[in-house]
Length: 405
Image (cartoon, rainbow, N blue to C red):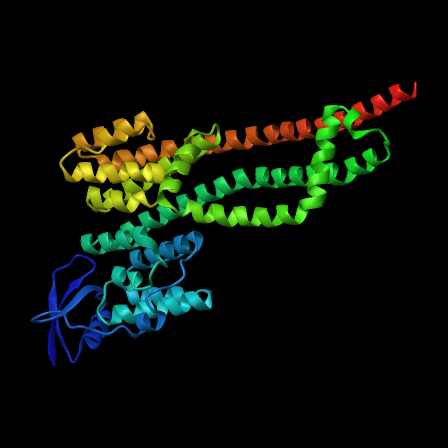
């Protein structure tokens, strides 16, 4: 028999238990209703192989945001109801989960029974949960407020899903409209216009210049359409590889922030997500620099992420959070003032969460403005292109009529 020291996740006093091995010690503790965050043999931590991690190579597919938010909320509800972690995970696994998710939860349960904490067991699944969720779980276990932090994490993920869906709904309709406009223009220029102009026996050099432009474009597309298709595919592949280059990505993201309408939507989405995430992490007890490094990955814009990198360096050197954020010009003055006030008053987490609500409302307004303004602009572009094509045909017809007279 070996004596093991354990620390309960509820923040109670540490204790000891005797068992033949660590897995047996964890099972005995679970049977007593104790959910440990660490189990160590006296004299050091016993190494325990993780066959599940070896089987998966430590890599798992990332859960969708909606699935992850639902899982974290269910886990928070079960833990707040007093269920031990393992029993809570087993209960969740039985509730209509996908086979892959059930297998993942079973691996997590096995790791916890071997003495790992919930955060370490989830982290062993590779990128399935993400750094943000793992850090929140670890902070909740360390503070003994796991159920509270899990509920905060679920709220954060739900808000992120809501924002993402709002952005998708704002961009989906304009993208569909732009696609239909492109198809309509191609059909008009390559099919309708050539049929009309083919019936005119006039010398091409004598046609009005709009007619020559449309006719030349139609002829070019009709002759080299294979080259254009292959070139388009190559351009998409090349743009993807170029976008993966850090220098180009930084320049491109900076340019996007300067685009009218779109730049404001992207900035507002990033700021609201940044504020809510940082407030949640700080409230969970994670140090400011560590919270910033985790939050940086949620911005989705390299230009703004570079500012957070500078903030981390400055804070490590003793500076405040607000100074480099103010100099960048990417973050609104209200957020800078709130962070400055929160640092001075020691209420950074509360002020950030209050500000996040205001920024989320601002994001919704920006998305509505974008969704309202963009479709009419696309319609105007379509009207201009179609009008130019119709003008080219009418001018040619008028010229032919004049020549007959």
